Length: 230
Image 1 (cartoon, rainbow, N blue to C red):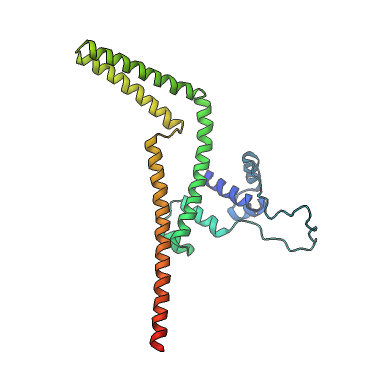
Image 2 (image 1 turned 30 degrees about the vertical axis):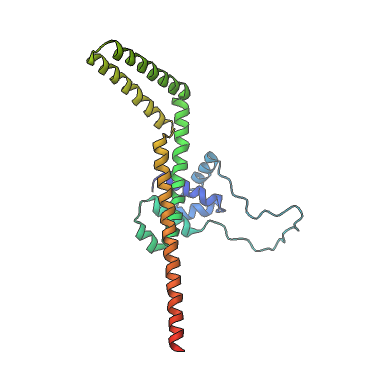
């Protein structure tokens, strides 16, 4: 696991209640380093079960809740980020397919969140005028198309027409690069993402259906045994 992945895991655990000293001992990282990460990343602990304004004050001798996020969950996410085999993760942690897909989704969200944060910063610095650039590219494409139509009507110079097409293709390619860099999705990419999400949901549904089938079969078997005994 790289440094940034580890930092994200520590942040997640800190926000769920773990203390700096606890994290330092658990991950063998200096307290000052964790404090520095906390300050730069603006880590904030989540407010859980906050008392209402009319709630009676807590007793001073009330037992303290155990701090820290579920270590098993953290380990699963860490294994996913490390690229460990799915079956191995399920076996080591004793989890089902459904749980694995849910935890791996959490891991992907962590990595996506980190990636998008840096990409947003880079794009804002390098392409502050991204919208204008894309607009100018579309205008250029339109002008080239108009000129190409005039050439086709007025002449039969194939070479000239091909040259215009090359210029158009180059400008189109630059526009596509900007769209990808600026994380603007084309309709085709949106369909791909939608299909991927549908496949994930379908996979989870299949797992639930299989579980239901097994439950029904077990109940039928139990009824048959009871009838035989009678």
